[in-house]
Image (cartoon, rainbow, N blue to C red; front, side):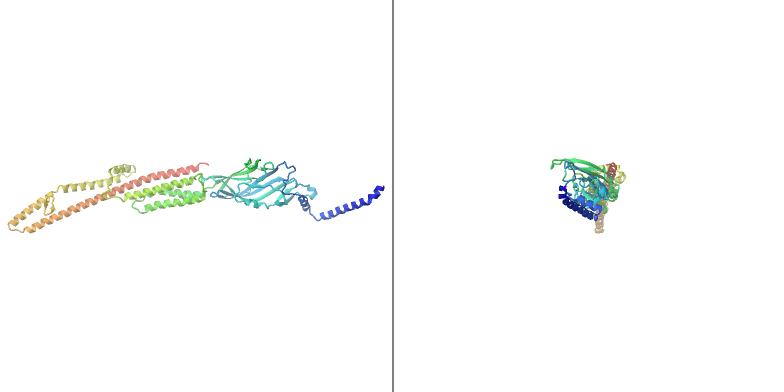
Length: 489
């Protein structure tokens, strides 16, 4: 009793202080909402730099899921792809758990990312570094410690382009997500599903989405002593080639198809070379347009590049053959006669290209001109080259002139006008000389014209052959290109 009497005042005083303290706290708590009180409870002594596990030897399981909403852009030249995605991360935070009944039935709260621990999941294939600007979106925490972080963002990531089948190509771009600082013993990254969520996907006008497979990898890097885990999404897309088909491929094929018809333009027409040159330049412009769309790399040559190169080579060869044909068409003089072997070869080729009749007419004309020239030459050689007063007479004309000359001598003996008869003979001689020169000039002119016709006919035969060969090549080349693209990649 003495003990109680001694310490009773002290016990009463302490009890009063305790009761007063609880009363003050009750008054203070009455001014807070359950959520504010819960926030104060959770954030007290919470450290966002500490991995939220009960045992540090345990790995934090982080689940990743993405919803692909749009393929904004695919740059073949820079080998990048821009995608709009919704990132969804889920993990468990051991330090963010509470009993709902103790806090007014509060089930979830939303916190700033800077206030809680978040995994350093990074896009390995990012090329802009803007991914880190998306970390201002709120984190959702439930009473059982489950943390959800959802981020709408745009990625510009690298994408190795395979341009061999451009513009009928299929590309596979990757989005590789993984922790940058935590190994597999600290963060266990797992994919929620085997593919991306496409429920909100907006189709692209240029690309068709084929699949979005998600695969988890565990990779041992040279820099580290433990493996690192990543989840890679393989975005398989196929180009819709309608734009390039109608604006590039078909116009170029039309240019190639038109090119053989330049051989049907007469070689004497000046627009022939201009036409072939214009076709060559037009195809070059289209080739430059396609080259601007493709990456600068030497690993593979696109099929469309092979098409343009072959077509340009064919058009260049067409220009060269057109120039040669025009040269042959305008060739032909007395000293440039068509060689006999060339004439025989051209005659055989003319039969194959259904031009034998036209070539035979030219040959007959040339033979006729050559025979007339030979007859005139022989006749001139048979002339009696007896010179009387500097005039060359044919035998028949010489006999007449001699007879008249004798008569003139007799007339002179009998006292007739001898001078007048001599002048008449001289005049006949002059006329004969001029007629001979005129006949020779006419024969020579006909020979030159016939030679020109031969060369022109050779040029026309060459044009017909080149037209047939180039047409066959163009059809075969176009069919090969079309049929190859009809095959699946």
